Image (spheres, rainbow, N blue to C red):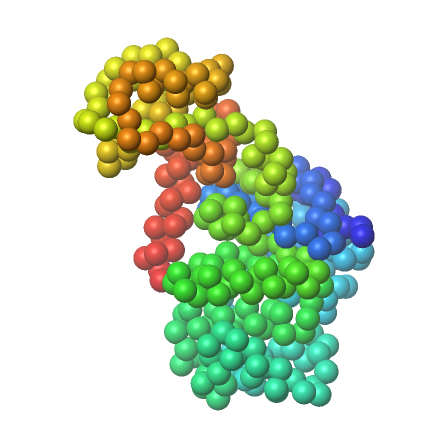
Amino acid sequence: MGDAITLSGLRKSFGPKIAVEGMDLRVGKGELVGFIGPNGAGKTTTIRMIMSIIFPDTGTISVLDRPSAVESKDRIGYLPEERGLYRKMKVGAFLCHMAQLKGASPDGLKQKVYKWLERVDLAKCYKLKCEELSKGMQQKVQFLSAIMHDPDLLILDEPFSGLDPVNMRMMRDLFLEQHTLGRTIIFSTHQMHQAEQLCDRIVMINKGQKVLDSTLAEIRSDYDPRTILVEPLDEADASQLHALPWVREVADRDGILEIGIHDDTPPRDAIQRIVAMMPVAKIELRRPTLEDIFVEIVQGEGQSAQEVRESLRSGIAAEEVES
């Protein structure tokens, strides 16, 4: 099927700050790819270069078999990180206008817009001005503006930001529906569990560089579970676990012990040793999350696990304050 997007050797700096360095990437047609990493990692800069909003200092870009997104703009739907609607326009008129700007036929367009607004529980908002909507409603309208012209490629920057759990689930279902229609989707997020739930493939970005590019199946195959969850029958003395040479770390999470083991210790052996040491109500091997894997990769670059996790969660905290 070929590639929807090809990036080769992209570099972008803003004064002394290097935002993206040596970015190579191929996204096949029909793929659903997640860009993940902490705020400031270079995700948005990469997306803006793909969209020809900004241009790389060096490197080449191909989008839908053209040398830039400008030449493929009517086949692309884009949800930018900075939300923006024509505040004085009515919702229905805004969506019709945006679809026609992208080449959609006016025939039956009003009915199509209304049906989509029904899908996202905004039918009553058709004649309201965009400025009368809440932030979450505005975000859903902007998402509809990105898909109303039936694009081949969807590029969505932090699409879940500010949504409550119900609308987040709705948005996720719409994503998957667009994917089943054969559309190529790229979306960025600093909330890694979202990418884990949705993506065929994960691209991890840190400090402007791609640090991982694999399918979820490959990631799970490459990163063995190294954490054992233990629910003791009685109050456990975690200090005896800390002293064991094959234990990397122990954390008590409300009475559940998270025991990290070293790479040279088979998980089965570790489980048997723990059971022999203490009576347990429950014991299981926990598969590493994308956050765990990201932390492991970045630690190799000199950052501590605590620093990495704090950088990821600071973005979530800021988002919660904003919403």
